[in-house]
Image (cartoon, rainbow, N blue to C red):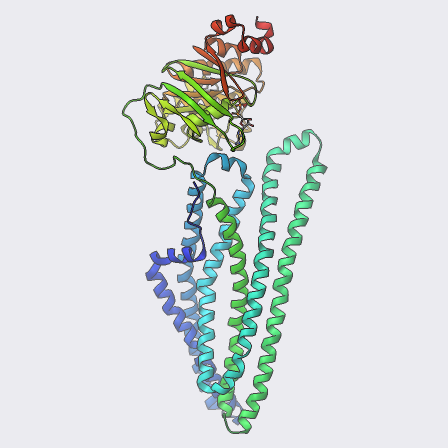
Length: 578
Ligand SMILES: Nc1ncnc2c1ncn2[C@@H]1O[C@H](COP(=O)(O)OP(=O)(O)OP(=O)(O)O)[C@@H](O)[C@H]1O
C-alpha cells in the first residue's frame, strides 16, 4: 500500500496552526521590528542636512531619537526570533517523530533493503535542514519580505517616479534568484545523496571493521571511503560555487541600481522634484533594501536545499507500509496455538513463487521442525506467520481464525521468536529481556531460568544490571543466544518460532543453548528451523521444504522409513549418526 500524503512545506506550515498564540506575539514583534526601518530612514533624511548645516542640537536630537528606535527594534527582533523559534523547532520535532513512526510501520521487506546509515542521515541531517528552512522562513524570510515592502512603500511615498526606476531591476533579480534556486536544488540533491551514501558506507564499515582487519583489507576500504568522500566533495563544491556566484551577480545589479538612483536623484534635486532631506531619506531606504534582498536570496537557496531534503524524506514515507499495520482485527479471548497453512503461496517479486501451495498443520502444544536446503523458504514461513508479509494466495489460520482477520499486535504478542542471528539493543541484560514490555523482575528471572541463562547472569559482577554493549560485544555468542531465548519467553508465548543458529558454538555453549531451547519448547506450539539432529528427533513432526514446497511430513522414524528426501537429507547432513 502506497502512502499518498507527501510531506511538503505547505503541509508543514499548516501544522503551525497549533501554535497560533506564540505566532501572533512573534508576528506583532515582527511588525514592530519592520516598521522601525522606514522610521530610521526618515530620521537619516533629517540627520544628513542637519550635519551639513552644523546644527549640533538638531543632530543630537535625531541621534537620540534613532537610538530609541534602535533599542525598540532590537528588542522586537529578540522577541520575534525567540518566540518564532519555538513553533519552528516543534515542527521539526514533529516531523522527525512522524517519520520514525512511519518507518516503524513500513513493510519489513523494504526496511531490510535500506541502509541503516542512510536512514540515520535522513532522519537527523535532512530533518534538521528542513527544520532550519522552516525556522528561517518564519524568523528571517518573512520579516525580510515585510522589510522590503515597508521600505519600498516608504520610497514610493517619498518619490514614486524614482521608485519606478528602481522597480525595473526587481524582475531581473527575481529571475536570477529563481534560476539559481533551480540549479542549487539539483546540486543540493546530488550533494545530499552523496553524503547519505557516505553515511551508509560508514555504518557498514564500523560493523564490518573486525572482518576488514581480519582480512587485512583496510586499504581497499579506505580507498572506497576516499572515493565516496571525493564524490561528495565535488558535488558539494558544485553547489557552493553556484551560491558563491549568485551573491556577486545580485550585488552587481544592486550597485548598478544604486548608482543609477544617485544619478537620477541628483537630476531630481536639481530640477526641484525632490528636496535634499527627502533624497537623504530615500537613499538610506535604498541602502536598507540590500540586506533583505541578500537574506531572501540566501534563504531561497536554503529553501531549495530543504526541498531536496524533503524529497529524500518522502522516499521513506513513500515506501509501502505493512498491510496489516492497522489497529483493526479481532483479538480472540483464547488462542490454543494451532497453526494451519492452506494452499499458501507467496512471492517477493512477481517473477517466482518462493512459497508454492504449502499445506501444513501444526497442532497446539506440538513441535514441528522445518528442514530443507538453504533458500527453500523456511524463514519466509516465519515471516508469513508474523504477518511481516501476507500470502499472495491461500490462507493461514491460528486455531480457526484467519490470520488476516487477527489484530497484528495481538498476534505478535502470542508469538515468541528466537532468530538465528541474535540482535540485542544496547542496555542492561534486564532491559534486553524485558524489551520494552511491562513486566516484573520475577518474570524476567523466570524467563532467564527457563532459557538456561540465569546461572551465567548471576555470575556477572552486575548480574541482571550488566550493560550489554552495542552488538553484544561483551558477551559470548552462546550467552547472547540464551538472552535471546529468555526475551522470547517473557510473556509466556503460545507459539514459539525458533531459527536454530548454524554458527558453530563450542560444545559447552551449544549444550547450554540446547538445554535452554528444550526447556523453552515445553508446552508450546513450536515451529523450529532445525539444523541439529537432536532437535529434529525431538520434533513431533518434520516438514521437508524444498523450493517453496512441502515434500514430506512425518515423524523422524516415519520419514526415515519412507526412504525419501528426508532420508537423503539426513544421510548428507548427519552421516555419522546413522
Ligand atoms: N526480502 C527478500 N526479497 C526477495 N527475495 C527474498 C527475500 N528474502 C528471501 N528471498 C528469497 O526467497 C527464497 C526463500 O528464502 P528464505 O530465507 O525463506 O529461505 P530459507 O529456507 O530460510 O534459507 P536459509 O536456510 O538459508 O535461511 C530465497 O530464494 C531467497 O533468495
